[in-house]
Image (cartoon, rainbow, N blue to C red):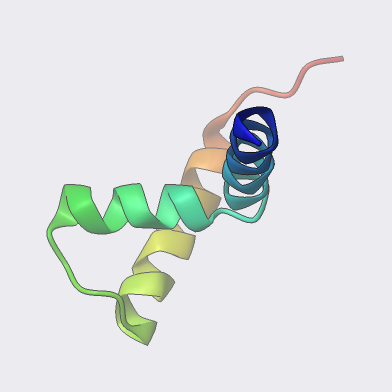
Length: 58
């Protein structure tokens, strides 16, 4: 049972990273704000700006 629980936690953590839930949670902690439509909009702006600044490879 322990292996199943560990595997499930890893899968859930991976999914949270893929769908940006973990990044949004880190953003809220860093900016010390509560979850709201405005906070999510600020998160998306910051995320999109960081994405456009990254150099493209190949």
